[in-house]
Length: 434
Image 1 (cartoon, rainbow, N blue to C red):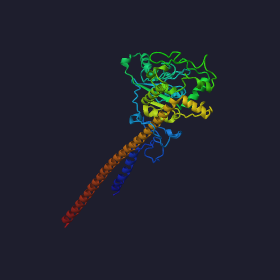
Image 2: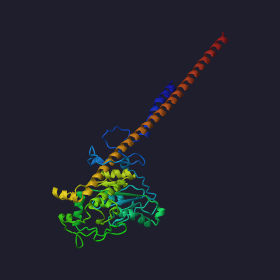
Image 3: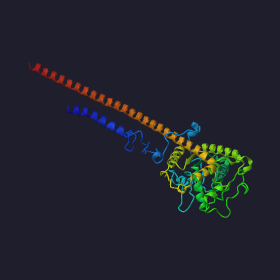
Image 4: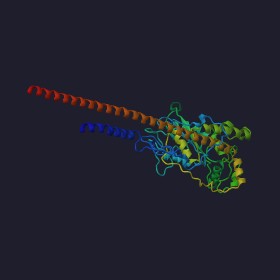
């Protein structure tokens, strides 16, 4: 009886142990997927096992409008941005660096803050880093901090698209016909008034960018096409009024000019068409190029910029981006009249930024919804896996229970046979004695 009791006790103990092992398999200790969470908590708060990576919550330090005012018509293709960036192949990321948009900070993130199998090699005291592909001596990144100003100082879209393929082929000793590269252009934009004031303060301290080439259709602009705003070495100490009064100041609508195809308007030849028509063509070109770029970020939304870059390229940054609002431009106090003047000088940039901001926030919203769907799908798969494990557990339990019943039946049969044998023997002995 004691042996039978031990065997019956083994069944529930084995079942409990089997269930505990199964639970640990589905919900290991470092996973938060099996714990209860509120609907408002950020997704993927803790890292999963293996190479599955984490998205931080981009809303932690930035305000997102609860309802984005729709002014522009964007298609699903405009919102769904994902690049299968093959860092081991021939793909190249090209950073178009517009002055005073936070491009220096973002450029440093690209070479020093991305999780890579083979990180960029940044030697102390050197401005450029070596960003080679894993196991190969050619670069996957074209930027100020990797290849330098190989197409000219702060080269624009017109210059980069005509220059980068040849430069990269020459650097890697490949002919353009054999390289078959994919070039993924990225950039940063900034609020036009803040960017304009920041450039003025920079020029006031002595910056000129006078070594910029401004190549278009195979040649730089003539002095008549692009006259200088100052005489001498630089424009140090320039008052804001003088800075605004120069009609050839490239700070005006800089973002539109650097993102548009200048060959559509005769480059820097202002007499090729009317100013109104020129502005219309440039703005349309800048919008199209920006929309079709692999990625762009906004200086005012650092965490969302990080999030969208990670979602677009499938790459992850090591440290979170920091939102810094105490800039030199923010410290400049201007009247409403001056602000209106700056907005008028940068009317094309103002419209481009409005377009870019709505598209940026809609892409962010689209990606967050997609992430929620991915999270729900992941939880559903894990639930199905737990259900399969539960069914397996029930099957094993049934088998264990069935085996115990068979053993019990066999024991009862053996005891019955033994009793019958003893009874027969006793009866036989009594017959003989009688």
